[in-house]
Length: 118
Ligand SMILES: [Mg+2]
Image (cartoon, protein in one colour):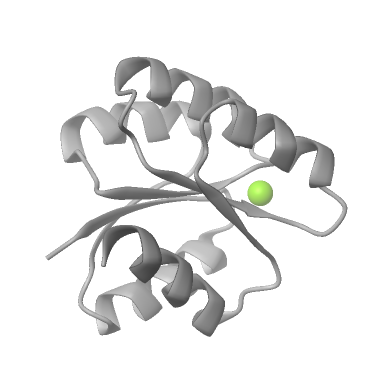
């Protein structure tokens, strides 16, 4: 079962996303900011990270940089809000593979996850 790490400071986003992914055969762990994501990444070793951009403590871009330094093969997809194009570009430069845009669209999230981890 592919493992996904969900990183978002909004509990409802993690909950909705976790429900969607577990119902579709994925195993899920959660982190609520970029710092926690780095720790969870190392212990959980996910096949894919779904990473929010704007979070307290450490944002998704800094976290992506750190995780890619620890594991150059890390697969990270950014979850961005409208109007965050500049930050999405930053994240892609930092090594993120792809991005999905909020609001939450189950079909798009699943399609993106499947494209990367199967
Ligand atoms: Mg956020």
